[in-house]
Amino acid sequence: MRSTGRCCARDEIGKGYEVSKDSKDSIIPITDQDLADMPLPTAKAIEIITFVDREARGFPES
Image (cartoon, rainbow, N blue to C red; front, side, top):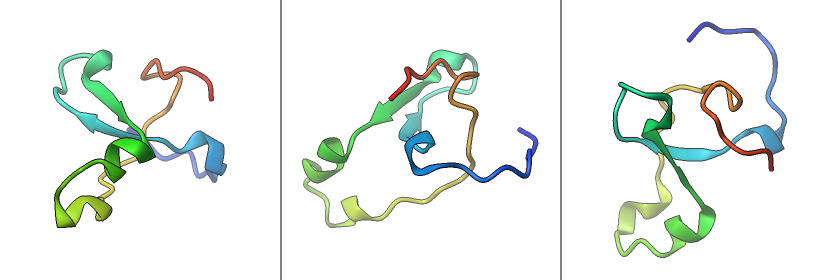
């Protein structure tokens, strides 16, 4: 994905887990509650690999 140089507003940022690179439906949204329910001590650490366009990935509007 190429950079647009545009800053993202807080409401445009979401969390998700990519299960496959083969389709646009391969990212599963993750909520703050999902993270809070994780039993692992590392549940509060997230590695951001890249940002994706919300509309291109089919995420619903907030």
